Structures are given as structure tokens and as C-alpha cells.
Image 1: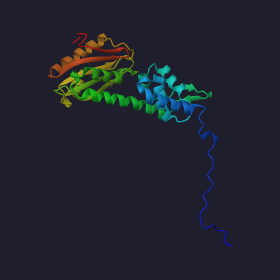
Image 2 (image 1 turned 90 degrees about the vertical axis):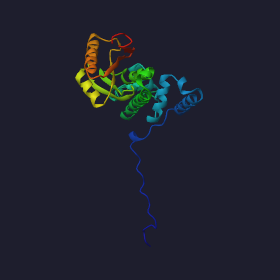
Image 3 (image 1 turned 45 degrees about the vertical axis):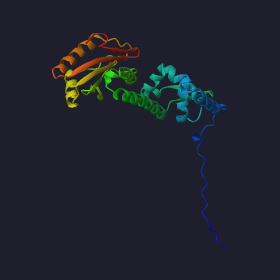
Image 4 (image 1 turned 180 degrees about the vertical axis):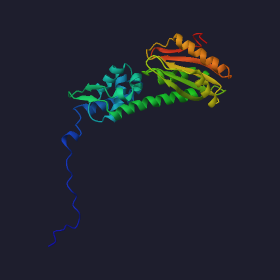
Length: 257
């Protein structure tokens, strides 16, 4: 009699090493997650505190384990929900917390990238709102946009909003990045770029990583240089906005231009 079977027999599947097996959820964890989701559905997301909103997001990127400690650790490390989302991926990955089972949990590379992506989504949505109408006619949207873009930047950035002759946004461009207290500015480069883009109006924007948006003497001097260089080519500088964690300062509102 033949020993060959009439159909193939699948090889037995080897069990993965213990370290690679998914850890069971702690008792009550799945119930906590469902209760939080139900509260979000019934009361609305806007009623959740910041750490619970972060929890909801972390449920998807970290399906196993208790994410409440890591959500709270993120807020404690960076100070606010906005600062968490604006934090560099490398900094997010340094945050650790001990969960309910005594295990250390950390933000992995994928979760950190997901959080950074949320910040980019918010920035683009606000940019669309600012660009949809003439910028100077939608000042609230513009200020919201530059705050999300720059409020928590750890290094100084110098940006220019290039506008057409109807004051609609052509391009928001980072002209230079610098240190914690200085970003070099070259007025001739600003004007040259405006000519390339056929921009007729400009809004200068930079941030103060110190948090205080009060313009410095160097800021005032640089602004005058850009205005003078642009005026020679009939390009108008509408304003210079300085962004800090404490707010946004407008040169025009302060009477500095």
C-alpha cells in the first residue's frame, strides 16, 4: 500500500518566541477603552480632557497595554496638547511611562510619526482657511495658522508669506532656520524670491522660541531693511508677525511699521 496521502498535509506552524507574542490586555483594560469611546460618542470629543483625547489616538497605534500613563507623560513632558503634536519625532521617542502592570512603555517610532502627522494635518487645514480668502481679510485664520506652524518650534525660523495682487497666498516659504535666538535674514533674497513668484505683497513671520513674542531691536532693524528693499520694486510688506508661546505680535498693530 502506498504511503503517499491523497492530499498535502500542512506543516505544523511553529509558535513564535514568547517575547514576540502579543501580551494579553490587563483586566479591565478593554472595558476602559470601550467606556472612553462611548463617552466620546455620547458627550462629544470636545468634552474629553487632553490626556483622554491622546488615549483615543494611542489606542490605534498601541493596541496592547495601558496607554493612559504614556498620554499623561507626553503632556507632562511637553506642557500642552499643541506642544505634544509639534514636538520633533526624536523628542517624542524619549518619553517613557510605567503602566498599571509595572512595565515601562515608550512612544515608538511609528506612534511618534503618527503624532507628527496630526500636527501637519492641522497646519494644512489652517493654511487652507488662511489662503481661501485674501489674507488680510482673514486675519484670525492667518494668526491661527502661524501659531500652529511656529508656536512650539525649538529653533528660530524666518518665513515669508508671498501674496498676489489680490492678497491671496501664493506660497508660505521658510527662508531660513537658525538657532534658539537667531535666524539670518537676507532682504535681497526675500525680494528676489518675490520677483520669481510674481508676488506683489509680503507678510514676514518668525518665531521666538523663548516664548515672548515682543519684537527685538534686531527684528525692527531687519524689518525696515526688507521694507526698503521691497519698496524699490513696488512690493508691499503688509506686516511682520512674531510668534511665541505667549501669543503673536504684529508690527503693524504695534506701530512699528
